Image (cartoon, rainbow, N blue to C red; front, side, top):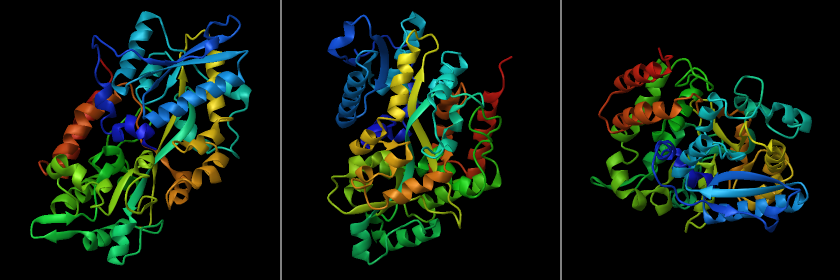
Length: 440
């Protein structure tokens, strides 16, 4: 799944890319439109998605074709693509100009659209369509998209999560058993010590790479396993609480991996030599990264597999994200837009599984042989761990500002050993909580 991972830019650059506002020029969007675009008896739907990879974009083209053929006499999706760093800007401009997109793909920025009353309440159509049967879908994971606590404002179609990747070739060479669902972080550290090869100050093989543990939503999984979190609730958090003892312990543990244990490369080393020592180089034994990285690793010249995130002690809490669609409140073809979104979440799910570039939300598709057979060893144990997963985002109108201006710079100083965990926590809590205060 290079897919959304490419667009999430491993999720760490996603927000920075979206922070650009008011730039004068936008790339002309590519457009998937069928020959029936001018038919007068067919509802034309203006849709927007961001570019992923050639494979994923090609699969979207096939999806549009399948939908337009299935509903040839009723609806037609005209799907445009834009680079991710122009996507949200284009949407805001389209709203300002009154030339709206009827349906577009969700990411956390769309919560700001909900706060501005730009999104359609989908619950009446969800209810009328009989979505979602708890026997067929992990419906408990969908609750965060009921932003008001009761009604869907976005319709999910796929899931993403984190996994623990390992280089089996390196483990076999060292005579070590590979990670599985029984592993905890103590076992990871023991293996990392055995797999790190040093010649004086030079490291020729790393046992461990931080991967996404250097991002707040990756790091927070450790605090979750200890029974805490960086903030009090996902939708409209009221308090950031990095200063809680368990969260300070989390930050110290990650910082110590770099500067005390010296089991992972320093940030400056990664910035300079990341490509030559990263997991894909074959010189790193273990890394925490997204399910979206699966397809990008399929052609690696060594044997590798994946496992659920290691436990902290006896506890494991894995993160998840949802991909799906929102519909503009002012759309004149909301019925057709909803048909596209609900079809993607139902009838299209087996095809999504066969394509192998997303994790379907439908249980049967997610567990299907078509999907599992093309995935690496351990994939099923990773998806099974989603049963008790927690959403790894927070939804507030100013989440981008908090992420960009507070989380990222302070955690960067932590990882560079320029701030203690206590200093980092105090700085984040003060600045982030101030941004939650209502404007006077």
